[in-house]
Image 1 (spheres, rainbow, N blue to C red):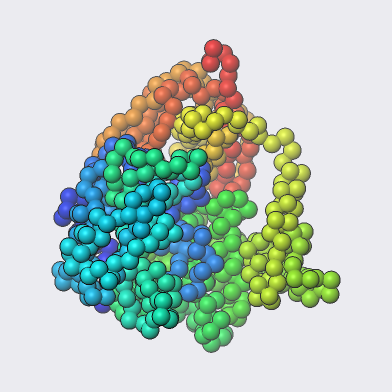
Image 2 (cartoon, rainbow, N blue to C red):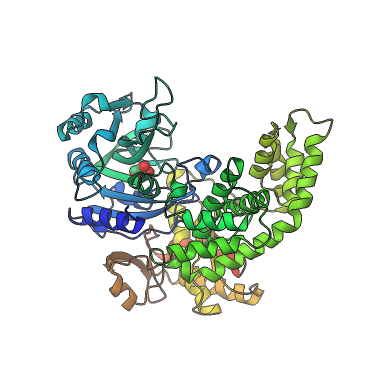
Length: 599
Ligand code: SER
């Protein structure tokens, strides 16, 4: 028996002994990447460093990173797929390459001092080669060198053995993957490691990041050769403890038991799938809302994902005969289970539980009526095989059914939903309700990059201006930047008055006029604290961070990038101030180019 706590410690210790700096998990909400809603891998917050920027902690890093993969939401309920998971990872930023990475992986997995897995049960795959990158004979040789016989080495194409980029563009490369043979019967004569039947479980992935995928789909050689590895904590714990299933591990047992206790049904078959869905979804929702940049349920971006997760849990709860007010009970258990590893969950507990309670109350009011309406639609004689976009939109706007829930209900009855029609109806509605929408940014990609850097600097000025006007309790809870606008979430109990908004705008514009240079310095967390820097002190290990400051006005721990001076920003204007979730306000603001400054 090995616990998750021991596995996290072992992994980090192993790489620390090999001169890796342990870095903390970044927030689940990407700070500066408008192409992704969530951090989906350990490498994701490291993209600038994989592209060549020096990392303040050096060239060898290791971490346990919180991850969300929404692509897997509909696969949840099987043995392995999870929406939230922890990823153990180690990185070489232009330092060691294939040989060390593979040898260390092998040693960690098989040595009795570390995980002690039976070497004969481990299979590996390497990249088969294509027009973008050559066949990876080099990795195959290294595997043979550590003792993996050729018949346990498989060659696969991009579909299996290529990783990245995390967004649309960015660092990526061929990878080599390690699978563990669970001992189950093969599903047929062609069963092999890439098969999803459950016989082989993929446990670790070493990516040899040597390419940057550009926006026109080309693979350019990177300045440096990187290693990016990822091992799923939950899967590995299942394997190490001889469980065929992540839901039977200590990471899920307490909540599965609680769901069983709350339920009036026998938890097996479809009910088991419902119980697993609830466990997975409420776990993910707890981590997203409980993040230091946490986001509550809404109809937008991350908020919409949170809403889907909670509402789907509530529906499955009803299928199990679970009555009201259960989501926060389960979340409370999760917070207790994880608070030592992720203390932010405890810090943000009130926010998490309140949001769950409000969302559950809200949805409970319309769920029964909505289900009736769905039944009426589904049994209508006129209905062929497809629920129309308008009908799905009606279920969404009147009864709060996320599209995916309607799809799930439909598929249970062998029906389809016209999702294009839904999008059309949705857009029509949005257009009507958002007259005079923000001006679109028309520049090319380089301009976009520059524009997002400016908006990022404006976000720091806004943050400080809000603190001056509303008080020091204001802190960034969420930030999202596109080429057109910034969005900033912060805790505040009521709507801001127009005077307050005006004062905030004036302060920011004054600081822009002063044309203050933006200085970036690297320092230890303690030095940053002494300097009075605000921002997320994610680093628990006394490591080094970057601090960006604008004179004595603003000083924040941040990854950048930023404008070089506030004078470049143009004119700052708040377009909207609204509620984002319980007790959290959201500001959207833009920068209008001011011709006086440009000329
Ligand atoms: N980025 C790779 C993955 O997610 C390896 O860390 O699997």
